[in-house]
Length: 79
Image (cartoon, rainbow, N blue to C red; front, top):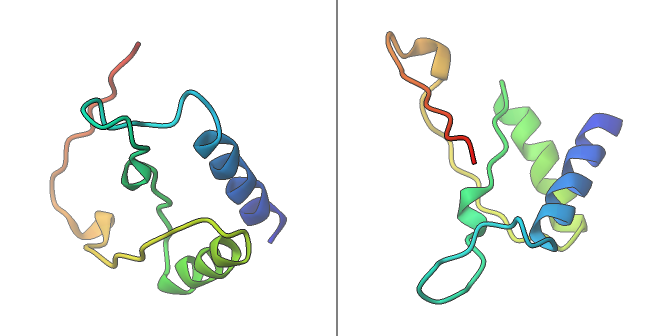
């Protein structure tokens, strides 16, 4: 539980920082660029409760299990 609280605090710090992703055209924060990946739906429910309690807007999306995908590519862009 402590780790989840720490992650929520990190997200709140990011949202309130100059590093928060923004829409270049409108200047609005792009909170949809911030994600929490979890192994189980139960974990996501715990995060959702913590986000709600912290007044952080969120949307829960349940998708494919990354371990069920036979091939995927990860690309990391460096500044």
